[in-house]
Image (cartoon, rainbow, N blue to C red; front, side, top):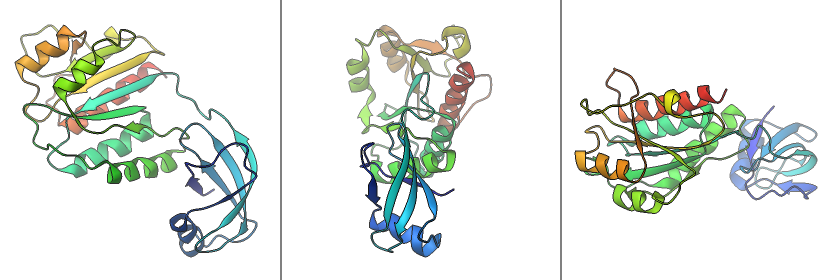
Length: 239
């Protein structure tokens, strides 16, 4: 069944009008007609069954048939703060796959060795929405605006309830694996650095505010691969 993202839909509504973009897609591309059933997600856990009452290419009207709250609600909160790659396509790939696997929050962080200093979130949010629809997720991951690593660490220092880890490639430090440090059904924050890794001073700053050094294995991973690896590890831990 076809799925549409409807961020402004509320549970009390009995009818809904798709946006012009979604209406065009529904009528011109999917060829949906009056009486056809569709499903809707609002990004905050709401999952709706609906029926097309007026298949207009600019303002398709729907009747809401049923509503389910907290659809497949995650049993943990994963926040990955990752340095944006020089090629933005790689971060788009990460966001797509991480959304499908399960992630709740992403923050692009600018560190000393970052190759990209700016991130336009509008396009990235569209990638997230598409991945939500593909994987039948009712919760939309939060994509924060890019920030410097220093600012990020200052803002996060007092969050004692977080399980915080920093993945880096320095070899002379004692590092454990994520499943050795973390337990299921908790709040996690994982730092992933740029291709040139975090600098020694950045690693020290992170450790000083409670981040645990972790290893993602012996292979040398690209930034987006390391971020997705961490995402998959946490998903497996909570399965």
